Image (cartoon, rainbow, N blue to C red; front, side, top):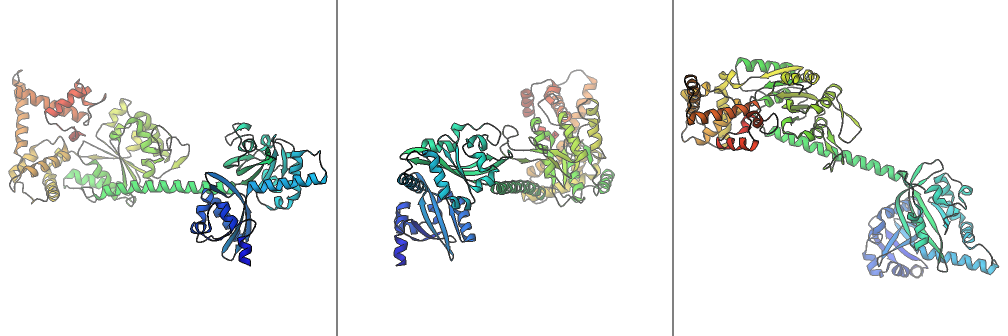
Length: 616
């Protein structure tokens, strides 16, 4: 008997298991309402039936499980490309939920027709149709309208308020007498959140009683009596009488808490993304250190100048003082910076390195301080800058003399105040960063030429360290040669060759314009070319003699040979690259210094097999 009552109930009935997302039982009207037979309905998940409003379904089922029963008009189903909004009464049955579903449109129409018929039978022939219908709705459903937590109000075809429930008064702050008979759009829906005017003809509420369709809006604002914007979601359902649209009923909900939760979630997600980006970048720096081809704990050499430099590193490393490392290209300035970092209390974080000579001038600020999405063309996501990445660690500014003058003031502020703003953002961020700078240029001369700020120079030059060129530490050559031979042979998986004393003499007599970087390159080349267990460097002697003879001959005669001319040209090109730190293009490039076109200079470098990177 109970089963027959369920199957033949006057409304569509669904018994669902909300935990396992299953349909347990359906009646005949449910098959008709959902357009599926019993077998197909029971095979579908509940979320599949309400797939266009899963979030609202979850909230509704949670309300039922918490309160034991609930009612909703927010849930909808899609049948034959048409959205049908349902009025659902739900009751908890142990761990399951019984849903009683009715088409909102049919329910409203049936109810209004009944009221019209009742009035007709009572003899009210000259009543005001629009207002009387809404008054009857309010009178006969006052308990329902008062009980629900959602705000409900009605409007006639002119947009005038016909009824307001208590929840709407509480949410909006307006009383019923203040709204009745007035155009409610002008009172609570007149503007968008950004303050721009909300045109009536674009309002979905008005569209409902113009086009006869149900309109649901998820993210708009109503304005309270105190002119405070209230985030709301609402559904506007049209009302008809004998086929004519006479107004609409609006059911709305204050979603302030939901918006606040969403904002917190978005903020948390942004923080997670930023942390993920930072960890990925830090991981890249850590991998770089792991794969580095030198030991940070010591430097190779026993000469007086190396011992003096190591003593300076030991003194300054435990402090937070800024350090300026000065020296020619290829002398190992980065190794000194890493040694300072590894001997400091900041060594638990990676050393963050910035090659200032490799950054385009227009990207310096973004590279140093980061940017927010949309700050400029190409800024498609937020990006962490090097200073923020180096928070609590050490920032190594290699080739600091290449920083554009217009950015030096901002860099000085970070060094002084330890705070900055990302590009495109007004939020001030605070960091704890120690800066180690390095340069192969004379910063004092740059200051004199107004190409480098004097105050920035003094801020960086708190503790200067000079990186000696290889020609001033010739005593360290045997140790350096052995170190590079062992390293290169290990990489090439070759047996370790020897260097005879006679060949070592060639190394000691050579001027080493490219310093340790040039030494490593020459040793690698000779290890590859070697066909015995001994390395030869006598070609360095020939180059030294050629240079000496060239200078000697130039003193005795004004005429030079073609070979001498080529040698002079090659030496001149190398010297130009050396003076310009390997830079070809620009006003301070080697091409401008030589009075040549950059393309011409590039051709000559290729002709003489000169690698400009040796001089960087």
